[in-house]
Image (tube, rainbow, N blue to C red; front, side, top):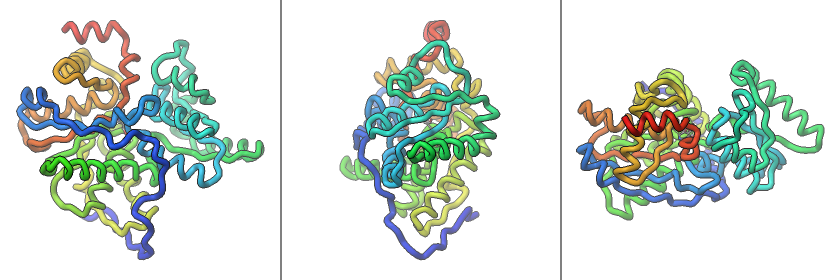
Length: 347
Ligand SMILES: Cc1ncc(COP(=O)(O)O)c(C=O)c1O
C-alpha cells in the first residue's frame, strides 16, 4: 500500500541548508566480540560521538533547525521535553554556541537535585519552565503563541523547535546521516547492511534514515528498523509517517513511500519510558565489558537489547549484518539510582 505521494512539480534542493556543528563523520566500527557472542555481524555507528556538550543524535537535526532559526532572524529558541531530555540539553548547548536565548519547557516538577542533563541545562543558562503533563500535551500550542507574543513585545523573535527536534526541517539530519554512512561503506568496500536499528522516540531520527534510503533510490536492504522506547507502536508509526511526509513536502522531493518502509520493532519498552529493570542494567554492563561501549538506559540500551533478543529468537528479521545507530544519551547513566545499578550488575 502506498502511504503518500508527493506530486508537486517544482523541485528545490534535496536538503535545506545547515550549520555544520557536529563532529562528522562519526566512526563506523565492527563490534567484534558481540558479533562472536551473538552469531551475527554487528556494526556500530558512533553518533554518541557527534560532540560532547551536544553529543548524540539531536545535533544532526539541530544543525538544520538552528540554521533556519538564524535565517528567520530569531533571537531565542524554545523547545520542550522531559526533565532529563537529551534534546533539550543539546539545544541549550547550541543556543549558547549560537548566542541565542534558550527557553526550555520541561514536563515535570522542578527537581531538588541538579544532575545529568538537567544540570547541564543550568550551566548553559537556559531559562526553564515546568509544565504538568496536561499543560505539556494539551496546552503546548497556546504556550508557544504566548511565548511568541512575549518575545515580540520585547523586540525579539522566537523560533520554536518541537519535541525531539522532529520537524520537517529536523528530519534532514538523519537523511544526511544515511548518506554519510553510505559514503563510509563505499570507502571501506562493505556490502550493504541487512538492517539498520535505531532507538525511536519522537520519530525524526527514524524518519530521517528512511528518507535517506528513499533519496538513495535503492530498493531492498537495508531495512530501517526503529525500536520504540517512548510511545506504543501505533503512535510511534504515526509520528514517523507524519514527519517523513512533511519533510518530503518541505523540499518538494517528489517521493512516495510505503507502510513497509517504516518498521517499528515493538516489545522493548520494558517497564516504560526511562524506567529500567535489573536484567536490562546487567545487559548494559555486559556490552560495556565486552566492547568498552556505554549504552544509555533510556534509548540506546533498549534498542541494543532488542537486537540481542531478536537474534536469540532466531526469526531472522534483522538479517545477519546489522548496523546499530548509537544515538548517545550517556549522561542518562548518571540518573539511574546507585542501588539499582548494584542490584543489576551483581545479579
Ligand atoms: C539518546 C537518544 N536516542 C534516540 C532518541 C530518539 O530519537 P527520536 O526522538 O528522533 O525518535 C533520542 C530522543 O530523545 C535520544 O535522546
